Image (cartoon, rainbow, N blue to C red):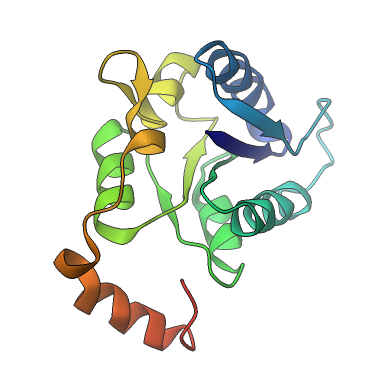
Amino acid sequence: MRVHIGTDHAAFELKEYLVEHLRAEGFDVIDHGAHEFDPSDDYPDFIIPTAEAVLADEGSLGIVLGGSGNGEQIAANKVKGIRAVFADRVEFAELGRQHNDARCVAMGGRFVTPELGLRGAGAVRADRLACLTLRKWSETSRSSTLGRVRHLSGGTGA
């Protein structure tokens, strides 16, 4: 499975840790930066391309990181067709994927350790990443709710 990941300086170390561990788990990780620590960089420069890549790459999922994860979640959700959820714990990531068909998870590097970040990305169940490997609930189980959200988004997947 392909995973797109992006961050600014605020979660640079967390991103590096996640990239290393996800690749060790066998995921095809596409790193959209930052590729070096630069305290003057700006998260939209990395988050928007990450979310756009997830949208263009059917079947892939994304991880967007920043200081708190909040702005990154908002930025990713600005990409028409993407659903990003804030998840600093496994349950939020799982529910976002299962209930809301989220394809991106957002986390804050200033508030989670690398180990907790990996768990927040969903590192559970036989050393696989649950939020990345879980399938969304059947279309019938949440179709009414998701349909209402799509309608608000002008009929797109978001």
